[in-house]
Image 1: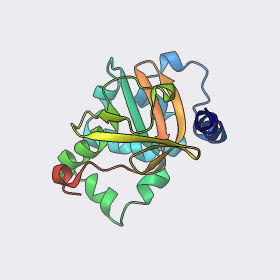
Image 2: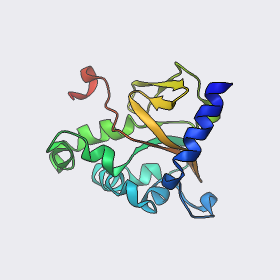
Image 3: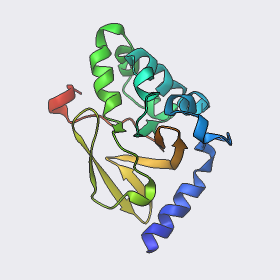
Image 4: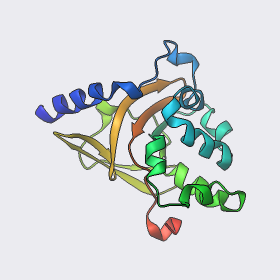
Length: 167
């Protein structure tokens, strides 16, 4: 119970990442990201990967959305390289590793939970008194609802296992 309380407090403390619009039911995941300044790099990556129509689709989807700072923390040149048309397949692989083909709210998460991503590999959820993580990324803001799923903002770009992505 203590860890769930700490988790709730952690999510509330990160409120600046939440969407301020009052009509979440009319915004799909892409529109929500477009309305959030700190997710503009993610939006550019979604566009470069050709995933806009997919993430505007019916869903439901759960998207672990890296912030601009998360993309900035990648090794120099990585983002620029991924955004090149010839690297589109790698970009799609990485972005779809951030998507679960179901709606998973923070209350559905459990410590050690494994969830299969659209990319095909699994991510691991961990819960502690310090908050929630997906793999090694902290969930900075949770349960941002969209008409076709939910967004959880994370502070790092998570990469598929090396045997799949080459990263």
